[in-house]
Length: 183
Image 1 (cartoon, helix red, strand yellow):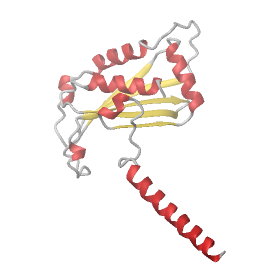
Image 2 (cartoon, helix red, strand yellow):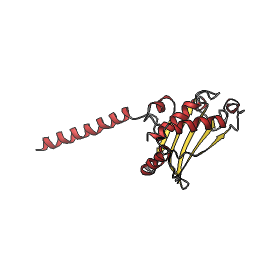
Image 3 (tube, helix red, strand yellow):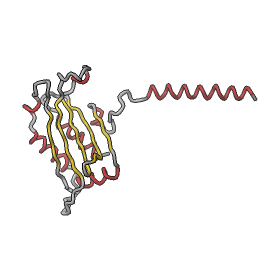
Image 4 (cartoon, one colour):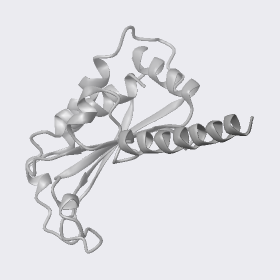
């Protein structure tokens, strides 16, 4: 009887050690990074949903053609800002509007909006003293799409873009909208 207990304990400990090793080997080395859809795996992206029911309602607002949004930019502080010599907020607003409109299924006459949509373009400040790693200086900036209900964030996604003239900015905007609409 004693032998069976000893064998059981050895097998159980072996299982725990093996399981720990397997989890360590297979875990994502970059926690928090989103890879749910294809475009998220092409660049660094972070995604978080806070209320699935409200996210579904906000997606429905877009499908019903209830589209209004705010946008903004954040230029570099420590480096010379160059991105916005090539990129204008007015043009990115047009692109963003078209991306949202591509999901419209019907235009609702009832325009009782509940959700606030906003996106921001941040230019990467490579001379920021807080950025110490080489990797933090490789990307040109990132787009943040945020959806709020009564000033409470229900969804947020951040998608990097790599081109310092913003040539891939439209792809990042598209990925942000796809990320939200498929959440």
